[in-house]
Every structure is written in structure tokens, then in C-alpha cells.
Amino acid sequence: MEVTTMSITTHAPRTTDSARALRAELVERATALRPLVSGNAEGTDRARMVPAENIDALAQMGLFSLMQPARHGGLQTDFRTLLEVSRTVGYACGSTGWLTSLLNANAWFVGLFPTRAQNDVWADTPGARVAGVVTPMGTAEPVEGGYRVSGRWTPASGCAHADWAILGVKRPDADGTADAVGIVLVPMPELTVEDTWFVTGMRGTASNTLIGNDLFVPAHRFHSVPDAVEGRYATPFTDEALYRAPFVPVTALVLTGPQLGLAAAAVDILLDKAPQRGLTLTGYSTQAQAPTIQLAAAHAASLADSAQLHAHRAAADIDGAAQTGLFPAYDVRARMRMDTGRAAVLARKAVDIVCSAQGASSFGESNPLQRIWRDIEAGSRHAVLNPDVAAEIYGKSLFGIRGTVSALV
Image 1 (cartoon, rainbow, N blue to C red):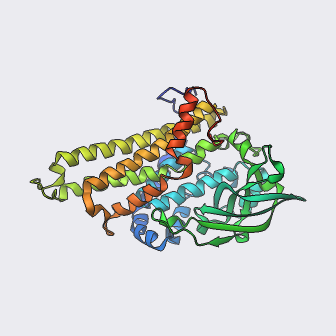
Image 2: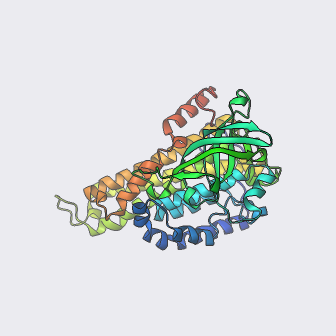
Image 3: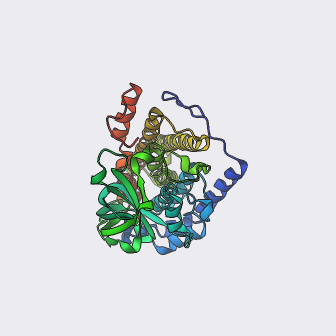
């Protein structure tokens, strides 16, 4: 696969017929769950929790095993598949789509660890799910056989439905080395969950705070983040393409799928409602007859499509790098991060246009648009997607300036 910084096209990775068929089948499974997930969306928002009914249905459809190694009963697909599935679920409910993506992404993180750590999670419980906060909000002190870990980690999306957690830590004893920052694997029963997720958008993700005090973490459940950023993973299964994908681009891409779904849902609401409603204080009998609404629909649909195209290009770059085993250069990774940040912004703008076109009624509690608007306003502002940071990283890279903004590229 040939990728250059200035190119606006990317050669799609080779995808086998069987992989395409599996992707289509998984999207069909997610689509089949839309009535259930959509029907529960308002309750999910009000209860600040994705219901067990949604989680169980997704699990039964195999939609939490997309990133889990086949060695442990997973489907071990690719990131385009995760993008499409989480978009499909996110169309029905932003919070449920977010958990679909994040619980799968954390399974991918586990796939980077040594064999023994992967076995700890899945050998006896193939259906185990993993939440996580990779931001280094805790500390790890070396002790015989491992580390003593303490900290408070937030926001921990999916922690209400997880068996394990991946937690970011700092090692003061290892300053200046690749082990100064890492991620550790901890069983959820060893952690306390504090109910802190009182937010406006993505309420149902229940992204509460995890608390751990003086937890023992064996050495094999620690992975260096600087090593991961540079593609040096601890898994010995180097023939498994999925676990050769670049760490930071993956971390950003997995946040975009649900937002693509939210944007598509908003556009469809506009197209569905406009022919049935008049345009207040005008002579148009329906909104669909008014050029202002027609233009709004065109702009919103185009923005939603553009968001998807940016996300698809990032997914193609990520999957292509994984398949070839060639770790992408800094400039290419900078563009991937730019693509994901851009996708989030464009999706958010699409929803904003729809809300403006539909007017004040968009914000009535009975209108799903208000929930879509709140969810995408919150989700698109995740720190890893920060479009200004992504733009600065990418802009500097275009001038050959590298590594001055963030280590997460």
C-alpha cells in the first residue's frame, strides 16, 4: 500500500470475499437490532445507562467480539468492520453505539499484550468484556513480580458492562524510559465504581470513575504506551494482522463510528419530517417545497457523507498498514488523526444544520433530534478527536515539523 501525506486518495487494503461477506453479515445483524436499540434510546438517556437488554442482544449477535482474537473465540475482523457496525448501532442510539465501539476497541488493546495477559482475560471466560481509560491517571510502583497500582480513572465508558479494565498509569521510577507511561489490565471486581457521569450528552454510556488503591498487577499485565505508539507490541502472534494496526490512529478512529451514525440519523429525520410539516411564517405548505430546507438537506447530507469518507480513508490506511505489516510513517499517522478529527467535526455540523432547519421543535423532549444533538456535541469533543490539535499536528507535519505537539500520533 502506497500512502503519501499530500494524497487525497488511498489504495484500499486487500479484502477477501469472505471478509467482505462477514462484514456485510455483521452490519445486517446490527441493523436487525435497530428497533430494539432505538426503542430503548430515550430510556437509556434518562436512566444514564445502556440497558442490559441492549448489551445482551449485541453480545448474542457477536458484536462485542469484532476485535477479539480468534484464538479466544473472537471474530478478529478489521477496523472498517468496527466502523460500519458502530455506525449502524449509533444510528439507533449514540450511547449504545459508543459502547459497541469502545468495548471492542479495548478488546483490541488486550490483543497487544503478552500471551499470559490475554489468557488471563479470555482463557476461562471467552465472553469477557473490557472497559478502559488509557489516559495515565494512576501510578504504578514496582514490587516483586509486578506493580502496586493506585489511581482514579475517568471517563470509563462501558465499565458497567465489563469484566476487566485497561488503565493508564505513570511509573515515576522509570522517567525517561519507554516504561514511564503504560497501560495495565485489572479485573473489574478489584475496582470501585464511583457514579460521576452527570453530563448532557452520551449519558447512557455510564462513563463513571474507576478507583483503585494499592492493587497488585503482575508484570505481564503492563504494556508500555511509548512502545505501543511506535508499533512495538508485546503480543507474540505477529502473524495476526489485526494486532499490527497503528495504536494512536486506532484510538481516534474508534470514536468516529457512532458519530457517523448520529449524523445519518439526523439527516433521515429531516428527510422524513420535512414533507409532513409546513414552514412557519411562510407560504410553503410543506418544508420540502422550500429552497431553504432543500439546501439544508443537501448540505447536511453532504457533510454526513464527507465525514464518512474521511473515516473510511483512515480505516483503509489503518487496515492496510496492518495487512502489510508496515508501520505507517509519522506524516501518514498525522493525516490519519486529521481525518478522524475532521470526520467528527463534519458529522457534528451535519446535525447542527438539521436542527436549525427543523427549528425550535428540534429541542422538544419528545423529538429524538435533541438527544442526537446532545450526544454528538459531547462525543465529538473527546480529547483524542480534538480537531485543532489534530490540525496543528498535521499542519506541522506538512512542513516537516514532527513530535512537538503530542506524543500521541
